[in-house]
Amino acid sequence: MEFWFSEFHTPDVKHSIRVNRHLYSRQSEYQRIDIFETPEFGRVLTLDGNVMLTERDEFIYDEMITHVPMAVQQCQDILVIGAGDGGVVRELTRYDRVRSVDLVEMDPAVVEACRNYLPGNACRLDDSRVHIHFENALKFIRSCEAEYDLIIVDSTDPFGPSEGLFTKEFYGSCYHALRDDGIMVNQQGSPFYKEDALAMQRSHQRIVSTFPISKVYQAHIPTYAAGYWLFGFASKKYHPVNDLDAAAWEKLHLHTRYYTTRLHVGSFWLPAFLEDMLQEVER
Image 1 (cartoon, helix red, strand yellow):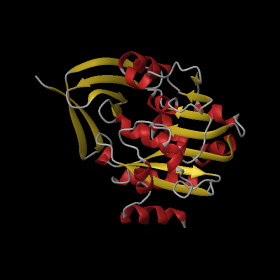
Image 2 (tube, one colour):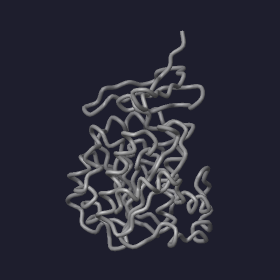
Image 3 (cartoon, rainbow, N blue to C red):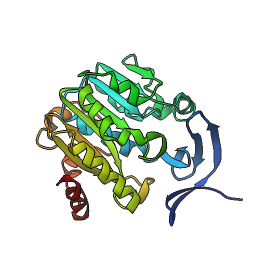
């Protein structure tokens, strides 16, 4: 008998992946954590029935949320919120200039599961520059003042446990935690289905009202809703395209599978329907 994992993208749309083995399942204090082994996407991490990453396409998300800001600013001190799987940390620690990475993850069970079953993501969590804090990100960031060059908000979708990471109060705390030339990057979800699109608009509106520079960029991730995903780039000083130092980034000779400096520029050129949606809340 075949075993399939299905994730509902809307009440009328679901995405299904055939499963070879159910490797891990645990109900933690915060959420249900499952890891499946699949023939097409390798190992798949889900939280509360929602796909967080697959071995096959996680590089797209992790590279785009990390290398876009790192190619704009010479970031040294970085705060990562969420990302307990370790993929963002893996990409950040490839930069010699990075001095410290504070990883704030609510659920230690996620880190434990990924260390054991997704070592390709969690492989750099023990880097000496990485400091893991198992606590509430909202409380953690309230005590920070001008400490970071970059904040990466790698949260789950703006529903349930992560809802507080999409509020105006949270973005204001991020603003104060950044230095005068600091950058915040966050995942903005998909603009395709109605509920997701409205959540994206709300989040963008709050960021626009907090940061002087706020742009949205895109990537195509097969296992995420509609295969189309957005990120937000917000900064006190830097424009994500005008201030891109492509030559300097290319001199680092970092091998990537999705990100390039050419794609960096192109990812900020958005389709007309999305431009219209963003303009609705920017007025």
